[in-house]
Structure formats: C-alpha cells, structure tokens
Image (cartoon, helix red, strand yellow):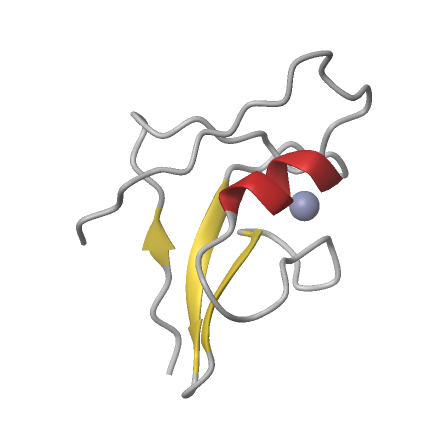
Length: 77
Ligand SMILES: [Zn+2]
C-alpha cells in the first residue's frame, strides 16, 4: 500500500537534486517514515525512522549552507 504524504508548502525543504521533484514522506511498515523523491525510489531517501527533512536537505544541497538551518518542523498530520 502506497500512502505518500505530501510535505506542506510551509515547510522548508529542498527539491530532489537529481530530478527537481519535491520530496514526499512515505511510511515504512513499523519502522517509521522516510523522506524521499516523489519520482524515483532510487534517488536519495533518508534512513527510515523519524521524519528527517533536515537530512534530506543536506543530501540534496549542492553547496553546503554557511549557517546550518536547524529547522526541525513541527508536523501535525
Ligand atoms: Zn528525484
């Protein structure tokens, strides 16, 4: 069963560096969630667990930002 959750526009997140798609959150059985490319599972996805948009952003940055955003979003689904 595929139940993707779109990340609200109000949450800062990078687009996939490979194809430019906005990421989605996908549940992984009992483990938690991954943040992944909405187009292709082979593109970067975070380790299953907590929703880690920060990790997604870091891996989809071409240049590292000088100041690290610690923008841990409070998500109320
Ligand atoms: Zn992609």
